[in-house]
Amino acid sequence: MTTINLKAAQVPVREQRLGSITGFAGTAWGLVKEARAGCLRDKARSFSQCLGCSTAQAACTIALIQDAVLISHGPVGCASCLHEYAFTYRVNGPHRNGGLPVREGTPLAAERRIFSTNIQEKDTIYGAAAKLQDTIREVYRRVQPAAIFIITTCASGIIGDDVEAAADEAEEELGIPVSAVFCEGFRSKIWTSGFDAGYHGIARKLIKKADQKQPDLVNIINFWGADIFAQWFARLGLRAQYLTPFATVEQIARSAEAVLSVQICATLGSYLGAALEQEFGVAELRASPPYGIAQTERWFRALGEATGREAAVEKFLREERERWLPEIEALREKLRGKTAYVTAGASHGHSLLGLLRELGMEPQGAAIFHHDPLYDNGDVNADTLQHVVEDYGDFPRFNVCNKQEFELANIFSRLKPDILLARHGGMTLWGAKYGIPSLLIGDEHFGMGYEGLVKYGRRILETIENDEFVKNFAKHTDNPYTDWWLAQEPYHFLEKGSENDVVR
Image: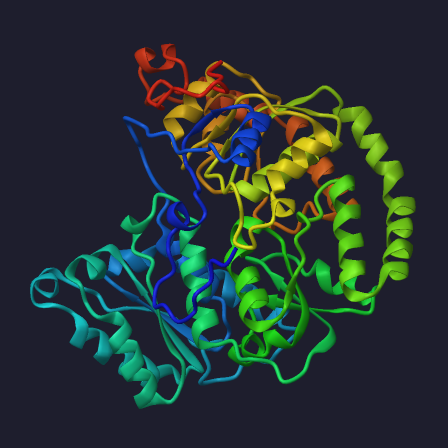
């Protein structure tokens, strides 16, 4: 299976490329069975409240490259949602880059590194291609970046500006990579199509064929998070290189020299992992990320086999078990029987479900933002949901929805879990409105490995035990949804027809 074509300007969205869906209500095992049988299809909603925009996800892959800049080709409002990446970059960049000094005249020192062409009404009539070219030149004059990325928006896509031509002309004029990233919000209902668009632009214009390999170098495809991999890998004789947060253009260009690529989230890294393997000869580790004991041991053993460090991995795992298993058992005693609900992106949400079962807790359900029946490598062994179901059994009330909060509110009016685990801001609000203690941990590395299981367990216990605020909050909050809606089954607007449908 080959889904990578770096000669094309645009990457097909996940609905077309992978058969990904945003509509399902049933059980986790029922979803896996449909996917494996090749009969999974998306279920339409007759009402939709909101969608995530893939433009922000494309920016996530690009905005944290240290010496590159990003131009949003659209109205200035479309760039407003990108501020969190600039903030994260400036706060954590020097720390994550090993104390790299901030140099004046570089994007690392610049107050602004995300720009907008500020398309206005007249530009939608007469076109904004010339405005884009002027913006590229001005950005280069101000910042002198090592690469420029142009992300498209709905406005620039609708008016039909030739962004690819503008990028190619600027690249020839300026002598640096200038990459067009096509990620208009209307292209896909699946927000993670934006990750693919960003990585496509990176792989097309930045990564170079390797003359030789560095046998101890491993690419880590991730968002951002604490640098746990450098510590782990040092014990195994390996070096971690993060892609793309806080890497330089030069580091990304040489990423094909790595011996292996691993992903902290298969949803995020599906496209880049496959591109590095298919186009640049960097093997992709296809085991699910190391959340929970079963998957942690499977992941590290696969890492050891791929890098010829089997003995070092077994020693590492013995040491981790001896250090952390006693506290894991103590946490299980305190958390056993507690209930939880999960709302998160696909692969990370699957990992959280497994983590809860590891701690002796009982997930009452999940709202997962989309589902990929396969990833870009085409390997069933990379299916994170299948691994979790095989390791921990089935999960009820498994809902695939692209942030349809009206469904979540309906579910919480019926279920009263002891805790809500969320991965994205804004979702924990609904737990609090119903008096449910809610936990959001943005660092996706936080729960990895044996130590991560302990840290997550501690935070869950702390959150459950400190529930006074949310209980008081629930007494004084207004619910925006009517009694009519709360009386319906949660998936009232979701197309029916599957034997796996479970609505209550």
